[in-house]
Length: 319
Image (cartoon, rainbow, N blue to C red; front, side):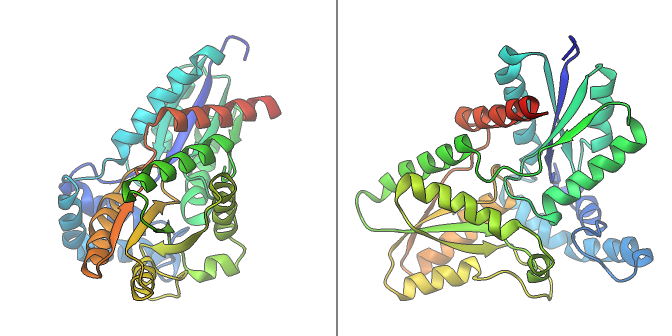
């Protein structure tokens, strides 16, 4: 490392810090053609503005239920700080966060690292499973910003890490600990992942295959089979199925009374875990006579942070 630190950028989606931030956050999101193409490119931003205005009130009501904003920035920055401490015994590292649709931006993160004289930059998405709608969009933004602002600094990118052993270990441990809450009663293990349009998969997106790799790794550790389903659909296109609420309906109809739900594609708490799983799905299950308990998000769990350290050190060793 030539006595210069290595810069680490943790890539994440971001979320509105306050209710007032919601319209701008939605505009940033719908302006991204990697996620959704709103007609020809010249109409993307005007249509994004229109959609964000129409959806703002509903989104604000949801964020109000989880504390008045997204906790994702705070959690991601905690993860960065703890990863930096975890790596301190391995050399000089500076870890920062770059959000795709909110602050701090890629440009802010990369500029700070360049100012601190880093020898290289390693980008690590906080999405274990690659899809062009999350990791892909963040990586594209990072590459464009890096090329524009500091091409002289080497950039390396970790694309995904669905089979990272430490990550699989901590997920398996969370499942085992949560299962104890059923006190020996039978339960169904359900993995809930963020949905995608089916067209993405038909075009070669590896998301579903990478989810399968993670689930296989967990099953090998626990000798316990589960069901994969998908949440957070929006828009009039064909989405991955089965949908999470439909899966709850089916299990309840088959006599299931306990569901252990794992937010498989999310490592940090945000609206999909705090609202959709812990409120909507839990209440829906209760109405059907089913007790639904979800595993806690990994957030800044020391074992999870240690798994991120392993990814970084392996990247350095292999390049």
